[in-house]
Length: 324
Ligand code: ADE
Ligand code: ZN
Image 1 (cartoon, rainbow, N blue to C red):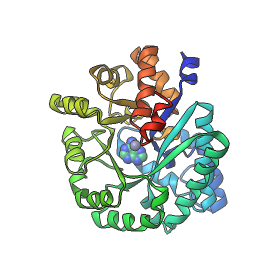
Image 2: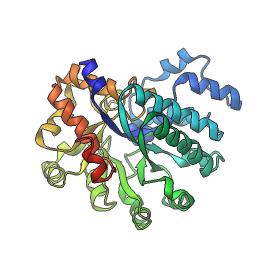
Image 3: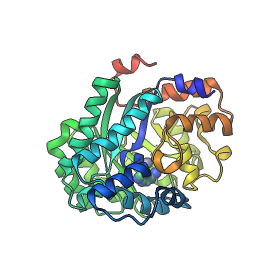
């Protein structure tokens, strides 16, 4: 099964580049940039990765990202992930980044984008991996700060395909950002949003009705509402599901209770993704493998999930054809 998954051509659509920061690189950059970390060793970092909620993860995730300072740091981070993609036979990636995590610390928007984009361009040339970049607004921050970030992105619009919404979900519903997403749509950005990870199905409805999303990130709580599931099936509105993340953050108690295969068999356009692989104990292939081992996903299921990853991507219909 491992070999089968390895050989499957896959796309990854839900990947936070800051979530690929492995402890080894975190330590190296902390030393170079003279940033103090609250850990004495790499071992200690890994031991701290025991989460009981989304927030307990986000606290460490934002602290970790503080070691990223120079353009080359963002390049090195992204290049390391893309090499992993090559090893795992991931042919296309749509990568999230959180500009506010960096601009809040005085790092220029352009430093972040240029570092990431240089790695993406190198990967296209040297590894044959295609990519798009999606910037996410941090939903625990204000609408005004999201607007400022949108404005800052405009000189880099040719590098950014879409806008997303991430960070602490409960208490920060999509409605808080309705106006700024309207503006983002007018700028021609595609729209995605994390919804229904910890938040209930009303967050998914809001992302659909108020933000007019092209995809939902996570969306696993859709199954609380049969009308919503029917809607997702009818519209073939994709969910970018992250199985290992959901178990690590206790959104799902055990992998064997994950609903991804049930949704797949019902006809929902679900995809498999790794979210923040350096923190959750596995990259994309490990997520597929967990579905095979713990949920009994068949080869047929895994092929359907991999095909869905291209179907749900922002590639042109013509480019998708190559993979379907
Ligand atoms: N930022 C990084 N990973 C996230 C997740 N799983 N949910 C919300 N925000 C995030
Ligand atoms: Zn995510």
